[in-house]
Length: 316
Image 1 (spheres, rainbow, N blue to C red):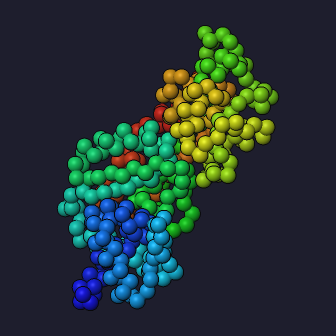
Image 2 (image 1 turned 90 degrees about the vertical axis):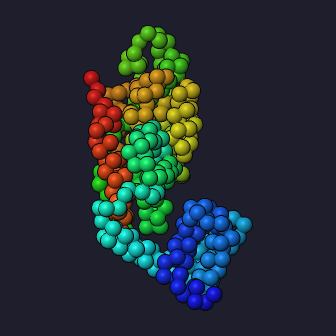
Image 3 (image 1 turned 90 degrees about the horizontal axis):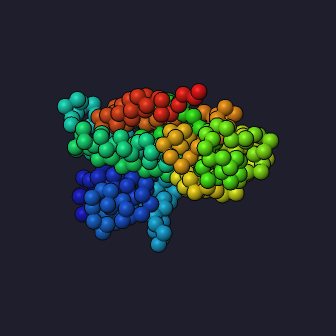
């Protein structure tokens, strides 16, 4: 047993360790590695025996790193980066585009824009598997929570490579039913004729984010519109905000590339409420030259740049 551990320690056991550290649960890590969870458990135990250190605290809620595990994590990530560089440099262009690429993205961008396009990418590369994670959070590429991440700002720390995908516009939207009930009852008039003003905004209901759950300052829209308004319906999820706005609850700041495709929504105060934010694509420096990551990064970048009119609509 000891010789087997020594032989496999260089990469196999570290790969198992990294999977558990990132997943936080043995069953999830085993599924990602294509292993039985009992096999993975034995590997972790073997690694701990080899190092004579307990790497995880086991609990019903999952596995958490001990101080020794945190220390090993830094070294294991360095080994992983070296292995990726070797694979890329020695394999070169002859390697087929295959394997799994995990993309972390905001729920709106990931669901409404990216998901339909990735279907085409998969058709172009049948051996490529895409995992799209759409959550309201910032993804850690250093901990390999994703291979690529789309965020709202350029990252300031870590060995990361980032470039701006595009600026995008946001506006104030409401459903036709809400406009009819709270602005002007004449439904034949376009939304731009609704008699709304900054002075009257405090009389309207708003849909927005839960203030203490806003994960990026770029999403804190309402104070920029008026200090007197606050959401009477709040959610940490953009899709929930969209649904509440569509159902007629109130006014909501929404990305134009999402709201303009909604037949039940109309833009109000289009000349007065114009916000701009940016999408950035980030990849870990050790992964950017890997064939499958480079292909996905290029595909996303070209797709976004070819859809500028969607993200920055022309306004009359």
